[in-house]
Length: 282
Image 1 (tube, rainbow, N blue to C red):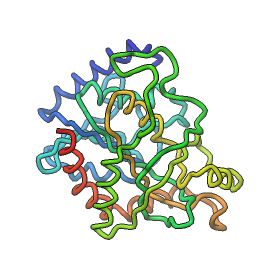
Image 2 (tube, rainbow, N blue to C red; image 1 turned 90 degrees about the vertical axis):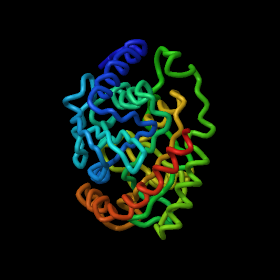
Image 3 (spheres, one colour; image 1 turned 180 degrees about the vertical axis):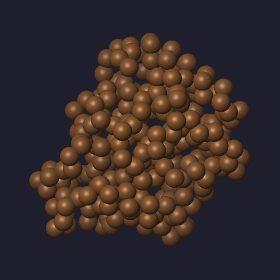
């Protein structure tokens, strides 16, 4: 999909119409579920499951641990559009592919998005299985999703990123996590291209420049969501300690295992948090 921004506006509108034809629900809130976390969408009521391969123009992920479905459903009275997995820059997709679902959400009328991911822990206080509410990010992927001609109907040429992650939503997430006794922190996410994990020297560099967690996703989606005027919350699940912190290799199967292990805590947090986020959009 090497579409121009104007074409992306039209294509995203076409896809949003297709999705709307499959469910009567009209979500204000979208959810992107990262590696090992997609099972949450299986618990939605009135679920309509749309495999990415069945949605016109929608990018299809090849990443292990990503089911590749868009699920429209409800938590209580709250309508949700939930992505079970995403496509990544490292899969060879252009950034316009990586971020196209966010453009679709914009055309669908979504006003806020909660993004989740599996990340490597850099901060000394972090342990596998804890959650990190992102307060900011460092983009080291070598590109920006907004490079090229701007489509003003999506957003301004130079969107402000001073508060990329909603301060209001961060407070709600931290308070709810602590109320539930979850091991939850706030921190800065560094986005790298992947797919190789980082070297110990790279992790020392990331720690020096202020990163608490590192991963291969999320930032481009955040930039495009903010360009579209959406409120954003992002939560990382620390699935492993970054290279060089522990004297052991990083194995992707272990990353997925941690995601499965914390499913209960993660699901409980989202079920209580999502209605509060939705209420703030009214």
